[in-house]
Length: 152
Image (tube, rainbow, N blue to C red; front, side, top):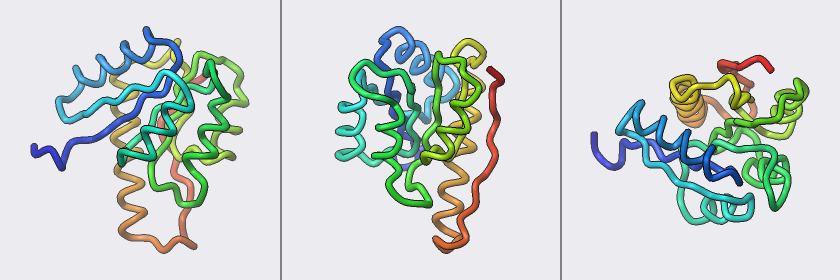
């Protein structure tokens, strides 16, 4: 697989241990991933402004700002240009609904119940949906697609 075919994923999470764990799990799942890390919401936004990402995995509970603020900045229009997957340690069942209402295309997953292979499959599905929607659908016909979800 060529460099242009690799999938760039940005992990935005203030907890180093979580970012490293999921980054390592994704690398184990596939050598096709190029993993970027951001330890804060501001750093994540900055990375997205300079590098075209295929997918962003976002923790809602960040040290410097709300993950929802990051979400709204990364998805200012519909359809989104990059899928956002919420992967959080928060267990409030309303997080998924709120994330979807604020622009997340993909799933809201709970870290306690999400192994690396589930994140891998969710990323692949989300990337394929966004690419398909960009190629095949006019902006006015964008619809939400369901992706795998972990229960809280």
